[in-house]
Amino acid sequence: MEQSVVKTIMLAGSILVFPVVAFITSILFCPRVLIKAYNWYWRLRLGMVVRYSHSGSYRFCYSSRGTPGGATPSVLLLHGFSATKDMWLPIIKHIPRNQHVVCVDMPGHEGTSRTGVEDYSIQGQVVRIHQFVQSIGLDKRPFHLVGTSMGGNVAGVYAACYPAQLTSVTLMCPAGLVYPTETEFMIRLREMEKNLQEESSIPLIPSTCQEMEDMLRLCCYTPPKLPRQVMRGLLDNRVPNNGFYREVFMEIVGEKSRHSLQEKLHLITTPMQVIWGKADKVVDVSGAAVLQATLTNCQVELLDNCGHSVALERPRKAAKFIMDFLSAQEINSKDNKKLS
Image (cartoon, rainbow, N blue to C red; front, side, top):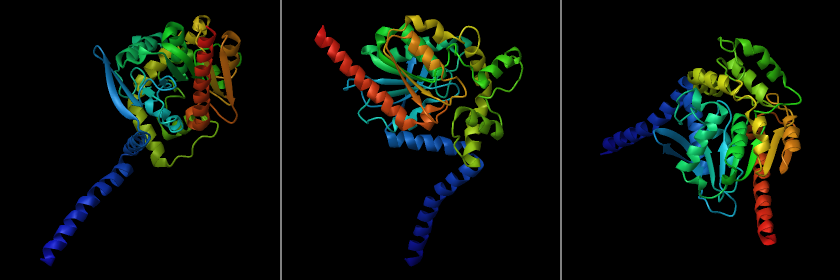
């Protein structure tokens, strides 16, 4: 009897120990699992559910929380170049639970269909995001659109093309402008332009841990100090996609897309919020003045000690800016209805 109990306990113990050992082993020998597990954990903790929608044969992957029709409009967030929907998790953490939020993987990124260059230009991405909005019924009532970097470029052009669908827009360090002051990165990019068709190194597409560290220094005012295994995991998740990233990069810095937002500014009538890190080394903060001078309804928020990655460096502040802006827009909308 006692022997059978001991065997049972040992068996139960081995069943419990096996997944723990397997998890630790996966971290040591496959660090990318750690990153995926971390994102899964935070999505679960924040109540973000991964879903899929389709427009014909094209598949969109997105995560969402809450339902439309609350006190404030739904919020759709568009990530930047080579990122994923999960880049917004630090900001989602500071957004009220009753706020309906949707984070979508941009065309070709993560779980969204990967097709061809026609979908990777800024205008091509705008068309695909419009299809996504229709596929989940987000166009049934006006919503607030947020975009950062490349996603900011797309969000701005979206506002120019589909103003009736939006209550307002937030752009974080958007690409696509003519900047009065150019960053060293932009100057270097222009110098590299003639050789981009070759296998020249692009700072935003790292292939080694050192290049990954250099990219973080470029994008952050205070780069995060990550353990080597975490850095390896981040890199392992990116490297298999580097060919795709290069294809997208070539398209968005090409003549057709480089100044897409600048060229559409005269068509934007939607209330605009601009959030920019003063120490942005990718696209210069002088772009905020361009937007404020051109748009009639534009509110600018500049962040000290912050670079290009606002969502990573100032998530709490960014979330507060967005929610305060949404509340202000709702009050203005109600006041205008009373006057009319």
